[in-house]
Each structure stands twice: as structure tokens, then as C-alpha cells.
Amino acid sequence: MDIRDLSVRELSEALAKKEVSSEEITKAYLEAIEKDESSPEPIHAYVSVLADEALAMAKEADKKWARGEATKLTGIPIAIKDNINVKGYETTCSSRILKGYKASYDATVVERLVRQHGMVVLGKTNMDEFAMGSSTETSAYGITRNPFDRKRVPGGSSGGSAAAVGGKLAPVALGSDTGGSIRQPAAFCGCVGLKPTYGTVSRYGLVAFASSLDQIGPLAKTVEDAAWVYEAMAGHDPKDSTSLEHTPAVKLEGNLKGVKIGVPKEFIIEGLDPRVKENLDEMIRKLEAAGARVAEISLPHSEYAVPTYYVVATAEASSNLERYDGVKYGYRAQASTLSEMYVKTRTEGFGPEVKRRIMLGTYVLSAGYYDAYYLKALKVRTLIKEDFQKAFEKVDVILGPTTPTPPFGIGEKVSDPIAMYLSDIYTISANLAGIPALSLPSGWTKEGLPLGMQLMGPALGEQKLLDVAYGIEHLR
Image 1 (cartoon, rainbow, N blue to C red):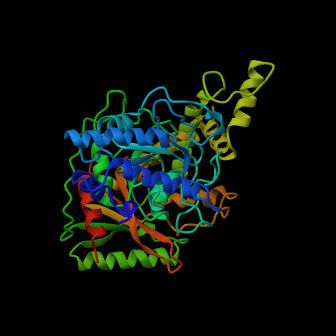
Image 2: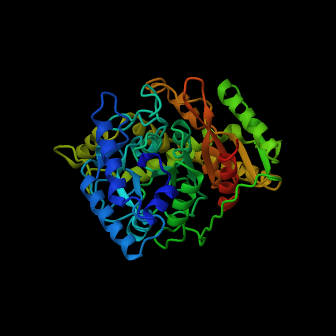
Image 3: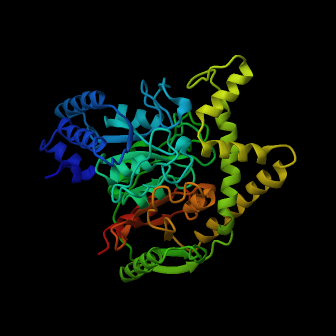
């Protein structure tokens, strides 16, 4: 038995039966990470590995199991995206400007999963700088490679977390999703990725990119694993003003008979890779054979999702990233005057993609352009949200591809921002509408590349969303 092939549930059952210890599980993953980093073409899922700390946590978890104080997640290793605070350790957002910054407090999700449930932190995962990207190529600390083809990207911005799970370097990981940053890399790395309803998981301790869109979620081997982690970290948090009074309880049965599934006609567009379209058609046939009722629906404002997102998200990023000035924390450039220090710090500290988005966001918020761009984008965002509300009056969940293509090559789109932005064409709408969405593995190309399928549900509809996904996962 290879410990790293086991799901979170299987690991939990083995711990409960004392067939394995948390220390043994943690050592197996730490050895795999070390072996990968020393290989000629490493996946490079992590920017920092907390080896000694992880082993100490694992020993403590084993004591909890021995005393009968464990929960089902106690002793399970987890990887944390490097924009989520773990007290006492670096949070860099894979940016030079935060190099050396150590978090002074735990994010609420870390407090719940690690401090309360006793999960073991393996390390912080690589990401696109400040979560701005779809390939994990904008990291200041080196690219992450796809575990199934080292010449291809793992997706982004949570590429390190997805690659860690897909590459068996962690059984489960946390990512953040602003426009598809959990789901797109999950599809590229053959794992399950859940973006919960906005407000159900606290953002306290998550470094902000676009505050009205950001949401923390799990990346896991199975739907059940994702559900376990989601349940454990969700719930109201007074430290987050957008947090909802909602405590989820997920029960998975997987019965697809009679489930109403909508497939938006707007998702079958020019640029959709034939392999992805074929995979979608095959999924629909399987669902109908299982007794689901699949029907075409319309989300008429979908075509405006990408431009709307890149106005709203960059505007919020421009405001949020204003705090990185070299005065309070992080990187500071040497200069003779204060204004020169501001300019040099931000010029040297931020990468090209972050600068691009800050400038775009500053532009759409500036006098004379606010009404023409930002205000108009907010109105279109409302129309997109209303499209989903109308659709969910007719169907239980919405099905479509997670990405328009299989994983693309390293360097293939990095010089073409528009082509890169279109990688998230199917995922962005869920963030604009604030609804839950999930990507799960749906097949493989002939070249051995993973494909993913996306499910979207109504706000606070995680129970139905995860249950349908669980049913799809067990289709044969």
C-alpha cells in the first residue's frame, strides 16, 4: 500500500484503526516533496516546506488519536496556498514584495483546520503572484509544472496546491478562487476543486486580491474529501464582515435519478477544444443513462463575463495592493527620498502581470472613466447574477467544461494576456454571481492529459452541488 494513493477518508479510517500513524503519513509526503525538488524537472508545488513543524504536528496528532480526542481530520497532512496566513511563517503571495514577511496571526481556515481539527501543515504552495494568473508562471519563485506533463502548466493561480494534490505531494490542499483559481488548476491536475458560495468560508487571513470575489476552498482527490474539508472550515466568522450566518452539513448519496441539469448553450463556443467538447458530450450521455434530466439552458450575458471580471477585479486589486509601499512590511528598495522609495519598491517588488492589473484597475477607477467602465461593469455583474437566478428556477445544477482546452504548454500564453485571460472563460461567472462551483475529473485526452467538468449550483447550494458531483464521480 502506497500511503500517498489513499484519500483523506481512507487515511482517516487507517488512523482510527491504528494501521498507520500521522507521523508515517507525514514522513511519506515530506520524502516525496524532497525527492521531487531534487529532480531535474521538479513539479515545484511548494515555495516553503515546514518539515520539522509538520513532524511535530503529526506527533501531537498521534497523541490525540491515542487519547480519543481526534476528529476525522486529525493527523491528515494539508498544503496551504501561500496567500493564506499561517502564524509565524512566511506569506509571500509568490511575490518579491512580500519576501521575508512572516504572518503574525492564523487565517480563520487555518485556525479551524489546523489548530482545532489537528491537520498537519506540510508547507505553503506556489501560486501566480498575488493570485493574478492562470498558469502559475508569474510566481517570483519559479514556475510550477503539471504533474502529468512537466512541459505543461498546472493552471493557476492555485497551481501549486493543485499540482501538490495531483502529483501526490499532499492528500488535500487549500487554494483561493477569484475567477477560477481553484477550479481551472483542479481540471488541469486531475483533482477536485471547490469554490464555495461567497461568504460561507471566512476570508480573514487571506491576502486580498479582489475582495468581492475572493473565496477560499479545498483541492482534493475526491468529492468526499473536498466536502469534509469544506464542512470543517466553513461557518460564520465575526472577523470577516462578509461572512454569512450559515453552517453547512453535507450528506453524500450520489443519486442522479431525476436530477435536473442545465447545459448553457453559450458555453459551446468557438475556441472550445474538440477533445473538451467530446468529453462533455460523453458526460451528458452517461448522466442521461443514470436517470438525470439534461436540458439546454441560456445564460445570455455570459459573453460579457470576462470583460466585466477584468474591470471589477482589477479595480479592487488596485485598491488592495496600494498597501504594499515598503514602509510597513515586506520588501523595501534603497532610495534617497520617500517618494523615490515608493516608486522603486513597487517597481522592483511587483512583477509584470501585477503591474498590468494595478494600472488597469487604477485607470477604470479614475475620474472620467469610473462611470464608463467600473459602474457599467457592476451593472452587468447584476445581469449575470440574475441569469443564474432564472436558470436555477428550472434546473438543480449547471454543467459545462471547466476550461476551454486541456493543459497548455509552459510559455505558450505568457506573452499574450488576452489568451491567458480566456483560460477562465467558464469559471469567472460563478465568482461574479457569488454562487458555489466545483470542478471534478471527467476523463483524459489520448495524450494522457487530465480533463475537468464544472458544476455550478445556486447560492448556499453546496449540498446538492456536492451530491451531484459525488454521483458523477461514481458513474461507470
